[in-house]
Length: 111
Length: 117
Image (cartoon, rainbow over all chains, first blue to last red):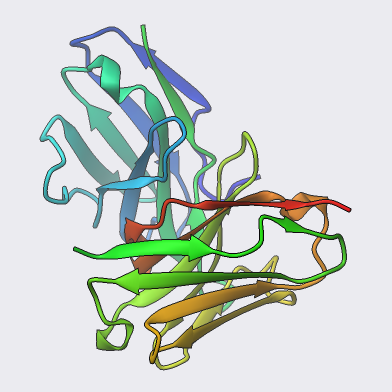
């Protein structure tokens, strides 16, 4: 049972806009920044969004992040087949002396 | 370019200790940042193990804390993970990464560790 809650799956057709949610609590998302990771099949995760809505160099602007209260969202616009991957949210949690919490992951399928 | 590479035994016997090392190139560990370990059991999601600052400050997953030790060797520019008393549930791909809080910006390719007799 992950501390951050994500839908297990999401899907969309090429060109569509898809959003993935991440729900937490006041000790993590409610007070800390959220990061998003993309994991393509058989590869290591890659930082996709940091500090709620910042894109590292090289990440297309089709990917965007937002946060409100104790929830965050990842949006992918202009969906492409290569976006098919697992997506994870993560945040620092101030409880229990501080620790990192991940969402359970969302498998995105491009139909 | 920052690069990380995990190394260590791919097979560990139950009740023994798992030991992995992460070699860092392109960045000096003692310059700053935390350095962390994350694992992923087959077909499952990501599980954070712990973060360590080069000076020794550590944060561990509360559920693994009693079995985990992360250490750093600045002279070799590498850091290590030791997980004691392993069981089959510790079978996973283990990743090392550079981190600021929960922002893991550079990752190793991962190494599969299987716990089996």
